[in-house]
Length: 377
Length: 93
Image 1 (cartoon, rainbow over the protein chains, first blue to last red):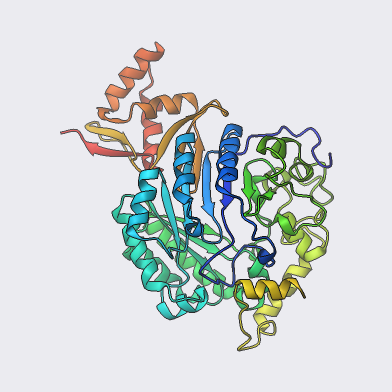
Image 2: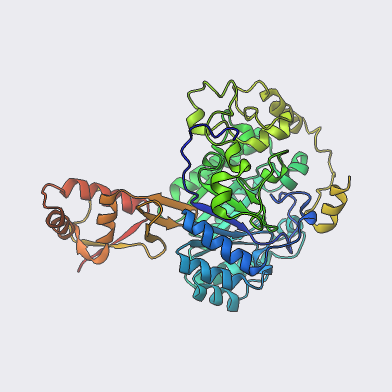
């Protein structure tokens, strides 16, 4: 099998269960695939229960219940209860739309460990505009209810050019809502975010100013609020350690049952990702071609193959390599040592000069209609 | 930051300490986090039940493992655990 070499296969520890692609929001930076409307045939309850059991037996313990909006699944509490009985630490990753106090209590009793709520902006108009729906007041009310019912409360704000100037207000909002954790996630350019990159990528000056504010608050809030700051890798000189190494730690199951080594891997050509409808999690993790393809180092080329940093960043992101170079085996082009770094710099330069995002160019919102239109292009 | 000798320590109610059969290790679980523990770290954390102060924990561990001189190691670990938010400290009296 390509790439596996002599790499020892570790157990999966994180399972991301994308329960559905349905979502009441339309965020233009959504990480779901642009053609999600082609994959709406969701796994049923029995399949999900089996997936949870099999992945737990393999060692998965951190469970993200995501989507789309996972609250659109009427069987959510059943899945949460099963997850708790198996010993998972479970996290609901939600927009908050549809999260009533009754449901918060029901999920708590079922054994849900924490809730992560996304907020698009600390300002109502921008929040509602980015979400594509009026949702701001509800999100804040839900955040307070989550806190009231004793969950650790995690706020997630995705950062991009439309809201990066609000970094200070974002942090103040998190303090006001008494968030225990704040995830400041600079947009990663996959799926819908890649489609809208010209309008979303901040300039280096914007990014540096915002980061300084975030780091200042992070130091001051030490012990009160934990801040996870996800860097925008275009402005780094080395690639992210994507997925902590392919097939070492993370397992994503998409709504249609596709098993993915990372949640964007559906777009990689010829990877033949397996489906849980056809294979057990054990077979998928240990024996499938897709999960072995980039395991270990045998697949690497120069400059990665002999690079002393290859054990730290694992050659970076395969999806980003494919996006920029058309070759998923290439070194992640954000790396300063990549022969393709100029392709990333070109995108940054276009952002700086403003030529990539003419004023008024609309964002393409993530919804079923746009997904169908784009998939048939 | 030295530990207060009168403090007792309690494992954080927003974290979970759990034995993982597949890893043959104890782990701490919290939002976006998973820490795999050494056996000795797990032994210390299991004693963080809100009733013992530092010297009582050291005595319990020295008895259990039939050894001495654990004070510095235990104190160092507890300080790190406090810093990471795994345990909470409160006054005994």
